[in-house]
Amino acid sequence: MLEATTPRRRAPRDEIVHKRQALELLVPIHQQIGPWQTRTARLLAYAERLRSTGSYEPALVAEAEALFTAVTTQQQRLIDTQRDLPAALAANSRFLDTARALKSVAAGLESALSLMQRGQRPMA
Image 1 (cartoon, rainbow, N blue to C red):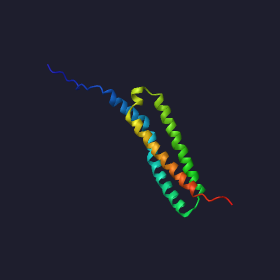
Image 2: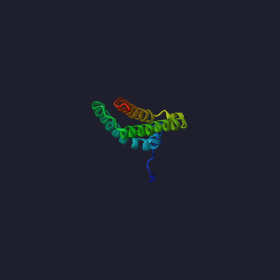
Image 3: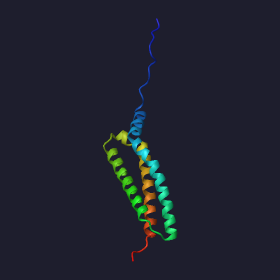
Image 4: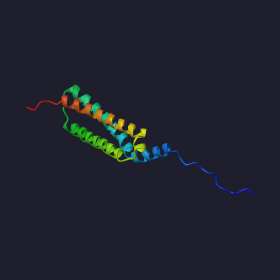
């Protein structure tokens, strides 16, 4: 007699489970990285333009500093979150990729700020 049963499914491998858990934890950060990269590229373009003209724009410096603070704060939160996770989950490559993306954004902002500061006119 044939039984009407549902096909058995294999349990997902630990690696797959860890990838899914990592992605779930990282989605909020990933949603920020794209807009941050866009703003950083725009700020770098402005910084290069300001430097070439010898101008200084305090509002752009303030925007770049605020964004840099947000990015570095997120970098620290990622480190703290990763530290509190089980080792197998914390070692997932998604965390490394996210850390690299945040580092890239921070480096772009540092470059923009450096260009903006060099273009700063001395106070009379």
